[in-house]
Image 1 (cartoon, rainbow over the protein chains, first blue to last red):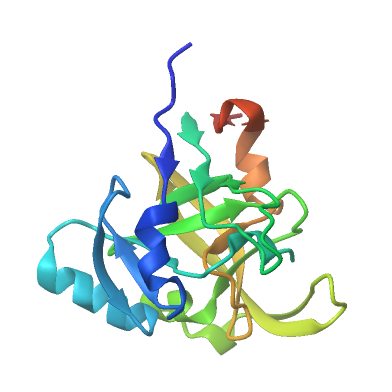
Image 2 (image 1 turned 180 degrees about the horizontal axis):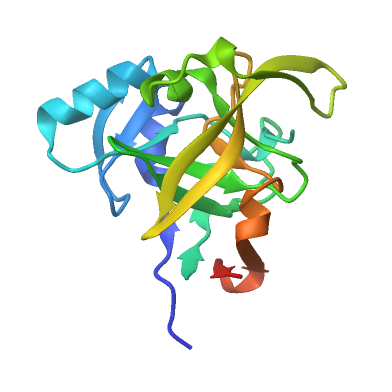
Length: 68
Length: 133
């Protein structure tokens, strides 16, 4: 079986977690391209620094609290 | 198509990690990807209203829907038909958008999305798989 490459965002997210900002990651999700307080802002900020289509998610301190 | 679980910061304020592996899928819109959790417990997909605005929707023109979470509090949302890609596969699914939905990612629920794909979870092996019908 082909091994699936692990994506561990723990260390990448930590510096931003207390600010609860939106993150724009690169496509392979190993680099933060930009941050923003709103979705619009983070997308616009990412466009300024990269031609790559950003991957958007929010930085939080603990992702295991989310149950809907 | 196989995708890795994402490992995310998950230590509680009591110092315990409940689970740090999350089945998150990167879905592709015109100008951005959005990370979304695959949620078998959710009847419909949900996203923060901000993302609806970014893809050009007039949120409040959608079909009104009250989404109720574990705390039994209903949040107002509006359902729209939305198109995005998973890899090269075009998905057309209903998504409820809400200003009160404050998850750090989108949520892919059962309606429509689970009709498009067989979804296999291999948590201990750290990946999940989508298979088209």
